[in-house]
Length: 193
Image 1: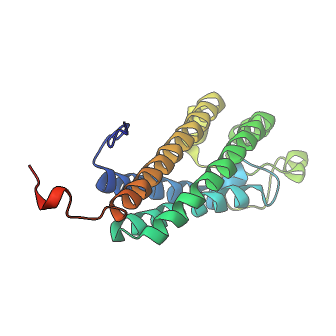
Image 2: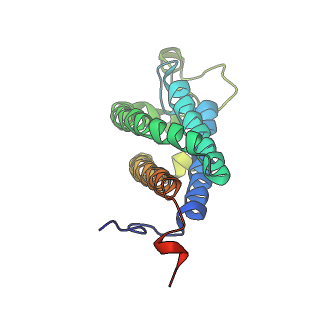
């Protein structure tokens, strides 16, 4: 027997749209943060741009999911159902690499906090000053590296769980569309008790 509402926190279509809005909002915010201030946490040139771009890509996929569900489009629902497993795998790899890089860069981030938030570089370490006008946001230094590290790890894991649930919701909605599209009526001679 198939359970039509198993693991659903909210109604399927409306809840999945709301879930997609939440994923789009925090992925867009995280992607923009990494694109703007990622160089203070990740130190190899394209690294923070790749992470930020993946976050923006997740936001775009969530927005596509939101539109597919709001239109009850069978084709677009299948498209996003096809996309989510790839996005989940890419984000899982990204999460592992980000966690490893944060551990490797712990001393550099601590150096940035101890030197007024200026960006770490070999030249800045040698001169103890830099010509860069930007600085690390002070809230990161106030919290300390261990708090920053724990927050990143928890947020990356929660992100993966949210994406897995989004995939489940799109899969479930796709199956519901297939189920109801295959129904022919009237059943039982038109008599419904």
